Amino acid sequence: MSTKKSIYEELILESNDQKRTIDIRTGTSSIDYYEDIFSPIITVKIQVGNTGDSIRESDSDGNATGTFQSIYNGLPLRGGERVSLKIAGNSDTNPGLDFSTDETDYLYVSSIKNVISESQREFFQLNLVSREAITNETVRVPKKFKTNQLISNSVDDIIKNYLKTDKIHKIDKTQNTYGFIGNQRKPFSILVWLASKGIPESSKKDATAGFVFYQTQDGFNFRSIDGLISQPSKQEYIYTDVNQSGIERDNDFIIIQYNTNVNQNLIEKLRLGTYASQRIFFNPLTFRFTDPKKGLFKLSDYAGGINNLGQELELPKISNSSNISLGDCPTRIITAILDIGTMDQGVSTNKNSDPFKYQSQAIMRYNVLFTQTLSMTIPSNTNLRAGDIITCNFPKNSREDGKIYDNEQSGLYMIKELCHHFDTTGSFTSMTLVRDTFGKYGTNTQEP
Image (tube, rainbow, N blue to C red; front, side, top):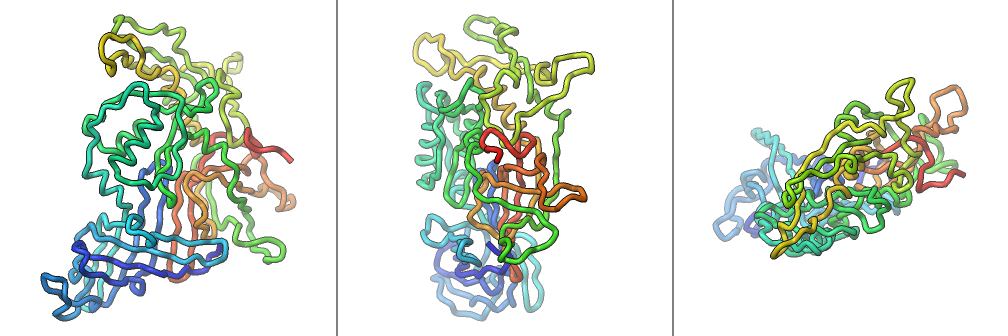
């Protein structure tokens, strides 16, 4: 990893009719590559400038016949063009990016923005997406999925048969089944919707409901949040005010800059029912509501069944004279209609996936994950992916030795989103990090 500039090994822009190509490496000033665990696609932004004499006019067969023109009107750029992209790494351990090996890996122009045309030059921004982003807009899912089919199997089916891709990196197996009809919805809409209903196969007490569907360099992922949290740390980073020599410590693994965006938003989490909620469901078969006493959800009931990146979350008491914490007092009422028998032939009293097992649990899991949010910049590291766990060490803010770390802020963080930035002067990786609690040592770490 390094902040040195990376080399654009390949950057070929191809016309929509695939008859003309142009190498835009020399005109590219910067490239930004993005991943996010809440985004089903990867995206890229390329800033391009050229002198206006980059490509010849052509006839209907694509043969160059006229004078030189700018890329924007000479290619022309209208959206949907393919881009073959390869950026070399700037060290032995930083492999760079490669979307050029196979045509299925090519990126596509989704939009052209900030076009500035002058007499002898032009500037514009290319926004790129993966091919599946375009496929998602052209297909619908009409299929009926059976009630005895695992959610993870339905996800695999939709990716392969509707997005028409085999670029699957990892799908965590669910323990629960769910029947539904596609209703002509887009694949990404269904996949993100199913993520909120999944319970991982290894779940204890149904405490770990909640998946995310996203794409990285490696392909598509359908991962449980609890599974992501239980991963080992992929890399350790240290914040210091001074770069030290390579003999004492590798400067590739320093934190260049960071700031804390969110450090708990208690009122918002109470409003969403993150720690405790009351669930009441209407049964259309019996015309009765479920027992409110059985519908109470409390985070404290699931202690020991959830992986944490830090220590177990401690919540304050509701008053000075009470022993009841905010995790015991419902702050949201959740109501819904049970799905009973609607997907089965004949008469059935079976529940089509029990919302008592996943609804409040998923709400808790999604919202607790954002207890702390940090923005951080490090030297370029294209080994990192959205969803990875990294270790961050921050020094105590005191007059003590700067090598003594703050055990409350330091610890494990999950990469919620990242951006690999490349320009003519250097390369960096910026990230948004999240974690579900405080403290350096959690359920998947051991205190030395």
